[in-house]
Image (cartoon, rainbow, N blue to C red; front, side, top):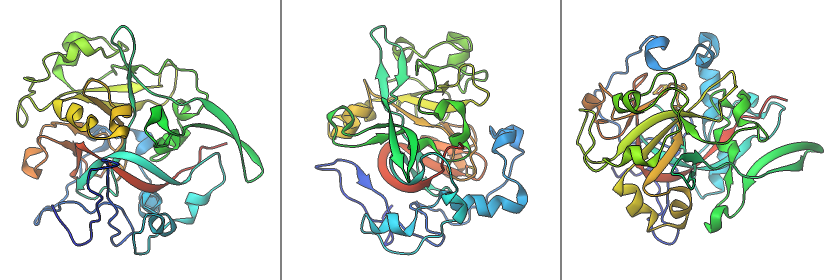
Length: 328
Ligand code: FES
């Protein structure tokens, strides 16, 4: 797990670990790479990658580097090393630029960083939703830009910005627009990731805490039982052309973490943690306890089947990246 390139701030006052490991190409996360792994490719329709997610072959590398951490941003957290930033990241549009996000940690594979966390809220009836900050208008470069950002989110001392989600084309989705009209509930999508969801819900139903009550024993046959119960879903996507995929887990591990850290106390609820479920590599949709993940050591983690990136949903880290501007 340890690496000379990895910098970490141990859980303590902040409780959240920094991961800033500039590697060739300037990403933040190198991870526990295992020798002898050979990525394989699947057809997009098998991988959860939508047509709109696929990058044109001639621009694949160009778009890949858009997601890496900028040298200037890394310098801001004391990291060293240069990072490549495609000039296209500076394209005009609303918001974007160097952004600091909380994320579930990328621990292996080619993904450049973790997937951004969505702070969880639970309403009075027990339905799960993702927090969306109040919208304000700011002047950026002489232009009025709508921003959904909460400084000192719920007293955590940390800033939560929806610019965290502006990558992989999501920046152009209707649901990521600050003032998109949504109730912010996590809803079951057309193709739920787990059998229990297909039995308990219909498409469009809201995820409810009661349906996770067996989380201490739950298993889908992958990895160890009882670590946590997962669900897939969508967020801020009703009446929208593009679906924002999310994943949620309820786990005792999350509850334990929340007791140690103000940010996790604010951003998780009753052991629920959620994130935008778009792989930061080439934008596939990963899954917790995914079939086929065991041979890559990801049977108890979040695994992206496209090129075997692995994320640890029980390790929340801060990452820096260049958020894409929303198209104007
Ligand atoms: S590992 Fe390549 S898209 Fe996820």
